[in-house]
Image (tube, helix red, strand yellow):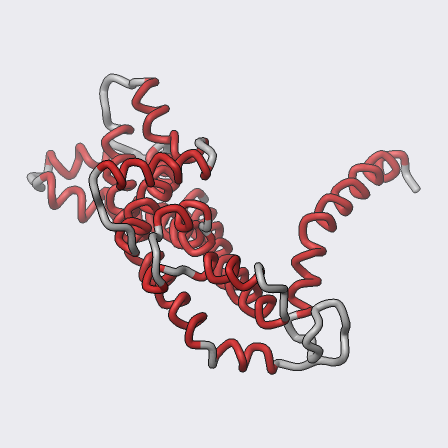
Length: 262
């Protein structure tokens, strides 16, 4: 073994241990979702019956529908607002450190702090809690992530093509749709996919701003309520599906972002 390969070996071992620590429990959860036994700790054979049982559970299907409604609505609103915010901040002549910190504060503030603040805000407005408050809360949370991704694209934007479009007589609106928007589209899609993933997975903010009743229960809240009565392969199946959807959206987001940066 060469000296260079020997020097890299400890680093590879550490990397393997870190990834094993992160993803081995997830792999075990996915495996147990196909366990035929009712006990999650005893393997008795491969079966998909828990996925079939999951498909017939009306409470879970209702929570899944609520999650989809929240994620789609929050993604659409946060993508539009986040894109406009990114353009406004990047084209601003006078840069403001305070404005930068304010725009990206939801990314660094702990979820529990943001959740309590939003709950207090809605209470002050005497606003009834429900899916609409979860959507508004997720928009605030997702907006900063969309803005950061679109701004990264704007850092490499050639503004001379905008000037050329205006010199050729195009209006500001035409220039935006024919020149600026196509260039920013990959970053906008990447930001939207990331916002969708975050909204599907988010639990703490949704838990605080959902209110009472099943009409505003999302999948993460449903999983939490099921876990309190004991873990079953049905919960493992539900968690596997949620992770699969989130991982797929995240991979597509990363691929689109990589393509637009190349």
